[in-house]
Length: 272
Ligand SMILES: NC(=O)c1ccc[n+]([C@@H]2O[C@H](COP(=O)([O-])OP(=O)(O)OC[C@H]3O[C@@H](n4cnc5c(N)ncnc54)[C@H](OP(=O)(O)O)[C@@H]3O)[C@@H](O)[C@H]2O)c1
Image 1 (cartoon, rainbow, N blue to C red):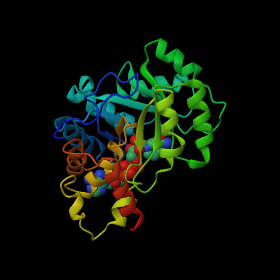
Image 2: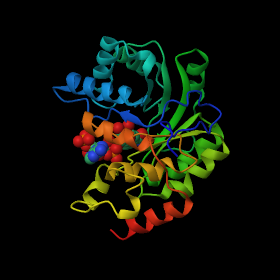
Image 3: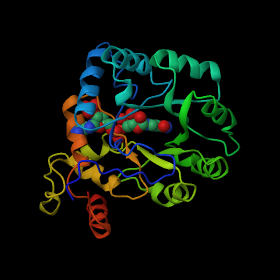
């Protein structure tokens, strides 16, 4: 396969298949003193190489403000899909996020770190109806909270769920992804490198010969495992480095592993 865009909309909500991999703005990324210049080069690399999605949060330090400045200065709003998060259904906090991002509407508003099975998305649904966001979602990267995520996903049926998933952390394959497919929620995979843990596990090692036709780098090797899961909508690696962004976006191109090749990659990771 030589398609430039791997992502296919598998949920009913996803309307723009040109979004695929993906930049994110985690706290440490765009929160430094050189945040604006760094974020500008990373976002330019994202857009120039076919990415679209930016994931941030009201709690990621000054990330929303830095992004707002870069997007406004570069007139990039129409070129990116902006996802942010809030810890609670607080309209004042949401409006502060919009002000920091310098936009009237986000593409995706997520309830951050769901931890209680009774958490409601009623306010988020109101905001969607009022046009403050196009889609709503929930997130968690805490396995102790997966029961709560499952309960909220099943009852509230958000447009998206964002969950941790990487080659060496596959609990989501059993717990969250089947349910996401059932309720037709798009899936964003957070922590696709396990916060760089995967890079440390292959430090000093070469990509195996059998993977060279698939991946030109370890980053692409790790990301293609996730992109080949048909339940995944988009993968959101974090980077503060434009060269890493270009490397990561390379995973959108070339062949993806099939079912047996996915098992081969799992066996490889388990042997590290
Ligand atoms: N509860 C939640 O909703 C939640 C929780 C955690 C994370 N997230 C989301 O998940 C995103 C990703 O998480 P993350 O950034 O913490 O972890 P990650 O994507 O698993 O790993 C990021 C690390 O990998 C490095 N890296 C990235 N691309 C690389 C490349 N091509 N080659 C070598 N190193 C590379 C980065 O360093 P460089 O900066 O040097 O590239 C950074 O140290 C966050 O930005 C956030 O949007 C969501």
